[in-house]
Length: 98
Image (cartoon, rainbow, N blue to C red):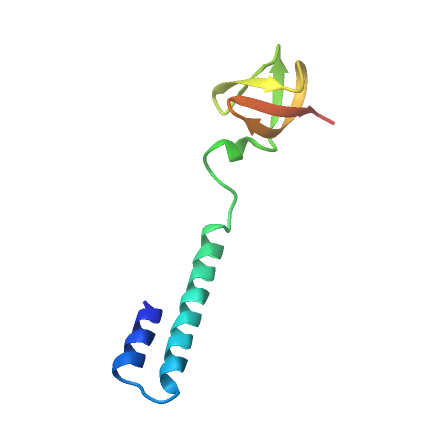
């Protein structure tokens, strides 16, 4: 919006060198606003989706585990405790717990 206002000011109101300043100022405001909104939306870890599972500790039984109320196939450990390091399709990639 600030860029549009800057362009409109440059075309219809301002003259001389001020028209370029209005467009540059509007563009700078738009870039700053976009950066602030991006930072605001990425301030926390995801709350939903498979990204939430990474880093969780699970107990593996026969290549399967239950995590967050769902049953998942596990790759990397057959039994015992493990930590989720990734997700590939519908399979959790795990490492043995240390």
